[in-house]
Amino acid sequence: MAEKNGTWNASDLPALSGRTAVVTGANSGIGFTAADALARAGAHVVFAVRDPERGRAAAARVNGSTEVRRLDLADLASVREFAAGWQQPFDLLINNAGVMMLPQQETKDGFEMQFGTNHLGHFALTNLLLPYVTDRVVTVSSSLHRGGDGKIQFADVNLRRRYNPTRAYAQSKLANLLFTLELQRRLTKTGSSVRALAAHPGYAATNLQSHNASAVIRLLTVVTNRVMAQSDRDGALPTLYAAAQDLPGASFVGPGGRNEMKGTPTLVGRSPAASDPAAARKLWTLSEELTGVTWPARIGLG
Image (cartoon, rainbow, N blue to C red):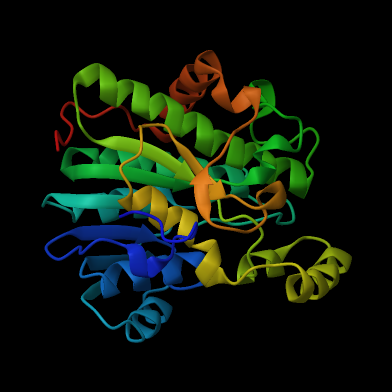
């Protein structure tokens, strides 16, 4: 739908009746506001969440068609269980769930928590569900993909030799963009009309920042959220824009304002490292090795 007066809002979503969306981490933050907007537009929305009780409480606040299914992206057995329970076509997968700047810890499978949850969990989920996806996959990244080392640490992807919460988060968000790039290349090569896109929320006030490893940064975040941040509802707009607008595959959507912190969603740039097809293919191969999940024998052709 066309933008009005240079703005685009959730009310600009097209009618989505008859469509189904799976949203990871839909119980809070931009995941919840995206799920709520999709349901209000008529979509049936699946809340894919680690805590079903919290998911049901969130879904009960939505005026629309919803269901709740358990998914723990930090546990590949849970990812496989979720995918095994899915046997019907659906339109939209939104890889939204994530963790941010945590103290050093590992997933159940022994991966650095941010890389394991933000990238590897979604990598496995997407490949397992891809035979059923008919429209697009939207993966939520961050403008902070430019930070840290600015590249994937293939020799120490779990950052065991030199861990830093910000460094780990930046790597995981860079991985989201490289994943999207290679996913789109593979979809195009197979002749599929399914599209892979990425989005980032800008600076949105959500509970994600409350888990920062530094108490000082957590305190500063409370202050800066009040002064500088946009709401989680506005932070969800790039995700919704990527989910609904007719955009090229591998597009990256973010806020169009200064430093991409807030503003109307639009196509935005990415770092050279996030545009490197060789690194994207190398990351894909590594991700298959780490998760044991490979490119599916068949995919949804849309």
